[in-house]
Amino acid sequence: SPTTPPAASSLTRSPAPPPVPDGAGFPLTPVQLALHTSSRLHPDVPAHGYVRQTVRGPLDTRLLGRALAALADRHAMLRIRIESSG
Image (cartoon, rainbow, N blue to C red; front, side, top):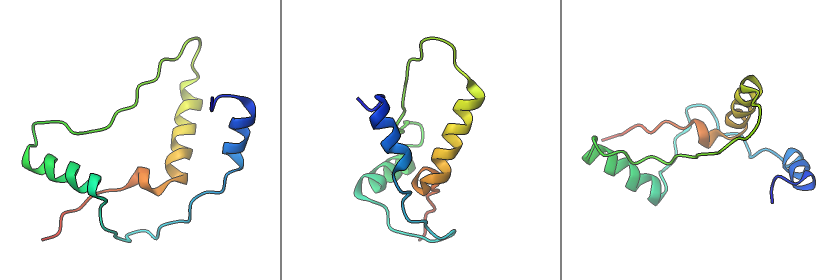
């Protein structure tokens, strides 16, 4: 389980992926292209991925927000914006 202390500590030691230059473009993967095309052809049909997690006990929302922000800062793919060209 990734929640075990040894697994959790290895996650904090993992190197961050190489940075992507701001404004650098790259082609969509086939799955990204399919989702983007679907959303353009059928804007009223949601095609998003969602994560749901049940938390039992107290939750420090400030700490959770900081953790999610750090995750997005570390992984550029979580901050992508798709722009259509042509």
